[in-house]
Length: 303
Ligand SMILES: Nc1ncnc2c1ncn2[C@@H]1O[C@H](COP(=O)(O)OP(=O)(O)OP(=O)(O)O)[C@@H](O)[C@H]1O
Image (cartoon, rainbow, N blue to C red; front, side, top):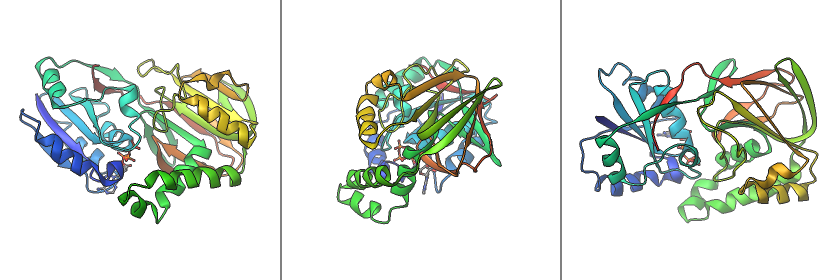
């Protein structure tokens, strides 16, 4: 099967190219290489493969953002089978879908390739946005926006102190974050949530680098899960965060979870938003945004 690696050289805080150069030496089957030159370029590169006469294994070599872009390019084309090699920072994609551990595992897949369709999350806010793992608004999105904007991040990453920036922004955002009011509409029913920290729509259990925010999410059921966290003191929010890694946060009365094929979310002020951990602007104040499963699914290598 034709195999192409799509590499994001800036993934994993710029370490993915180094990882690729090492990985490449272990690959003993024919392959092609495409390097993403800017944000969104991986989607363009994968779209160019859509008319391929035979199946193509497209391996995203990067993190969650890279895989989202690869999948946006492959969605709706069963000929394009998506796999991944984790080379990002959080790498939640590999926790919910398949990630090849090494080149040997890819070679074994090529001997007996099997794939299955998976859901792709979608919402429209002037333009369409897609998410493979999750999309959310609020506290966590604000942290990722501030971290990505940080001027010292690049420099601290180089000396291995990148996590320090993250911790600083978790603490400052925790102290400064303005809670918001969220209206959720599902199948004609409206629910109001006051004092909301964040709301996340999930297609798979993990987000934020290993946090099991949505333990019951299944990647091919045509259904999404919405998690809303509200009315928590700053101290208790930290306590709840501590339980998210095991999925036990659902026991807290301040954590709400809904399941459905569509949710419309309206916030009472502009709130930062993320798609698969990458910044995606802010929710417009008072305007309802509908989250659904896209009509175009994508094909994943089987686990
Ligand atoms: N050549 C490039 N220059 C700048 N940005 C790029 C380039 N290629 C891809 N990108 C962007 O880099 C972003 C980050 O990539 P990715 O999410 O894969 O890595 P990560 O943030 O380290 O990993 P994770 O999301 O798993 O924590 C993607 O959203 C993508 O749009």
